[in-house]
Image 1 (cartoon, rainbow, N blue to C red):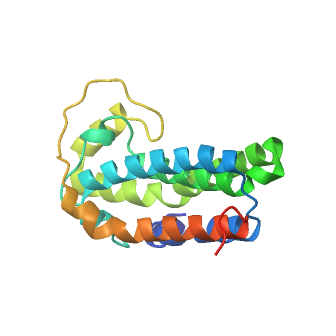
Image 2: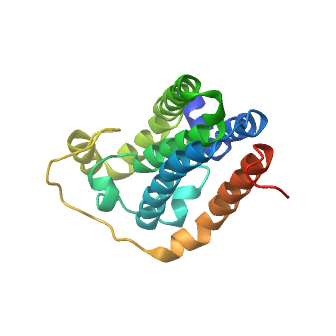
Length: 196
C-alpha cells in the first residue's frame, strides 16, 4: 500500500483528467447549473489559492517536499484543505456539466464524485504525505496530527506557524486557472450556452 500511496502522490495532478473528460463528453449544462456549479468552483478555487499561498512552490513537487510544517491559515482547521478545495471544485464542475440531466442525476453524480475524490486522497495520496511529515517533523507533526483532523474542521486553538505569500500562488496556479477557464468554455460551447 505504501508504494501505491507514493504513486498516488506523485501523479495526483493527473487525477482530475478522467472527470474533466467525462464532464466534456456528457456536458449538458443549464443556466442554473452553471450558476450553482460556478459558486462551488469559485469557492474551491479561493480556498485552494489561500492554501497554496501558505504551502509554497515546493508543495507541487512529485514527492512530498516542504521546508516547514504549516499550521496557520486553513491548515489550522484541517490537515488537507487543498484536497477539500479540489473536491469542491470537482463537484462544482459536475453540477455545472450535469445540470441538464435533472436534479437526481446531478446530485447522484456529485455524491459519487465526492466519494471518489475523498477515497483517492484518503487512501492513495495522504498516507505518503503523512509518512514524510512524520519522518521530517517528528513529534511536532504528531501533535499537529492529534489536534487537527484530516478532513473535518478543527475548533481547538493551536500554535500557528507559516504565513501567506502570493508569489508561490502566482508561480504555480496560473495553469490551474487556464485549465478551469478552458474546461468552462468547452462545457458551455458543448451545452450550447455560448456559441462560437
